[in-house]
Length: 137
Image (cartoon, rainbow, N blue to C red; front, side):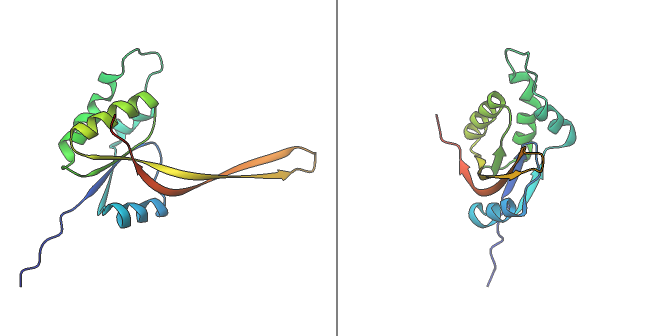
């Protein structure tokens, strides 16, 4: 009997953070991801520093779109989070390229601790809950 070779499914990481173990497990278990592809350092720097003073950022994110187009296969997953306008442009690009754009949904818990001097220190803890598919416009 010939065993079918399972197709690799990649998740491209277009965001400024590292994946948590919970996010990795979710991507593998729910989305069938077999490998994670981080933005190369030069492209990550572009994504983290989208210029606030530009009217149009299409050319700024073009190298990221070109990288995704070159590296991704149809139905690969792209985690996209960042500058709102850049995110919108990249989600639109991913949908047109027949990729699966997602974002991470988190639960935020706030903890307040009364300090000896009467001040209140607030700590926020974010916990991954799921990846959610960006909807089509």
